[in-house]
View 1 (cartoon, rainbow, N blue to C red):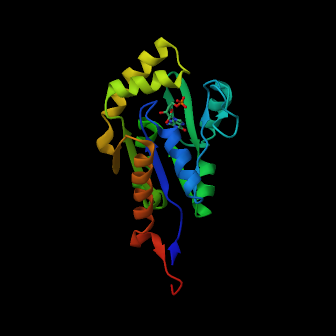
View 2: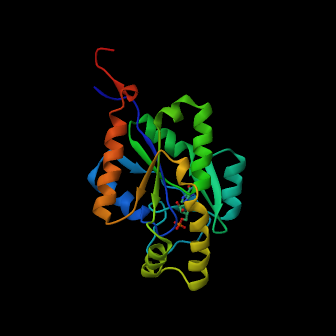
Length: 205
Ligand code: 5GP
């Protein structure tokens, strides 16, 4: 007995909410989980690597891909484009891998909307919102990360407030705490979703 197709795990949280660390922890512990690598027009930050963290595109290239319908979803976040390639998600799901989409609340809303009309997406979709316990803690985390200047931190905090208002639109909410506890909850969600009877196929079928 095994799942027919992979899960499409949509994970959102305000910047600095601990998404990247959680994704990495989940992938390290669970070989079936693969992060879908997004495209973005924002410049690479710190030690980010092309094709590993993001595909870094020019605005022109991004817009051409939008026109060609290459994105499952795309949105503007902090003045830059971000998008999930349709092909990436389709290939992961067809291979039975669990695709992890680390995307913002606009992108998540688009995927949920698409899933209403697409049985395959609807079947695969699991959405999780990582809720920082407070704005003060989020601010501390952004500062500790040390990659953003004051103006960027202020803008990210204002956006975080708007994003946090969307938590009810997700299937699950994890109020973030120590990484091991966040990870435990996230793995529990993934394990439970894999066990849903509608997702399983039997060798006798
Ligand atoms: P960052 O620039 O900090 O890596 O990401 C900024 C925001 O963009 C985060 O909320 C992140 O989840 C979101 N994001 C990253 N990739 C995508 C994507 O492909 N689509 C959408 N809609 N948002 C994304």
